Amino acid sequence: MDGATDDVNQAIQGELLLMDPRVRASRERAAQLLDPEFVEVGGSGRRWTYEEMLAELADHAGSSADGPRYEPSEISGVLLAPGLVHLTFETVLGGRRTRRSSIWRKKDQTAGWRMYYHHATRVPPGVD
Image (cartoon, rainbow, N blue to C red; front, side, top):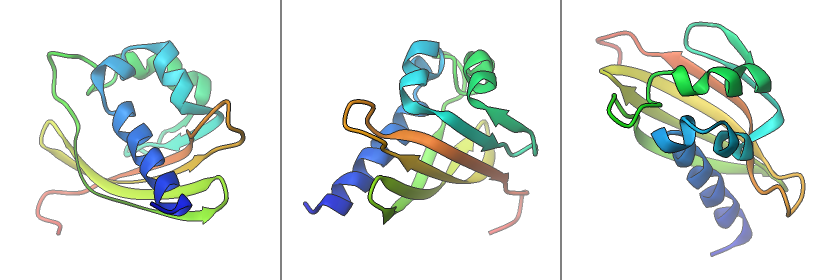
């Protein structure tokens, strides 16, 4: 496996972990996967910062072991530059389909890959 493929796969693994209810419910575990400069533009249009996301993630849909879970599909990625990976994919959660894009970065070996930016766009029913 080449370095670019390995980097993309590591970012995908991080993305999948962030969809795991056990990780989402744990501020400590989520903090290990989000970059301190993290920003998200959610499907609602709301802008989230690192601190805001960590404070509220455990209360979001997909964060409870007995609630709905994220069903990801079509995950693909590309290495944009050393230490910078862009992922695109779709999820379904509770019947709602969303297109997603995230940028993962690796500043140094000790921190590992962390989500730097995330964007979600809800897909209306009937749209391909």
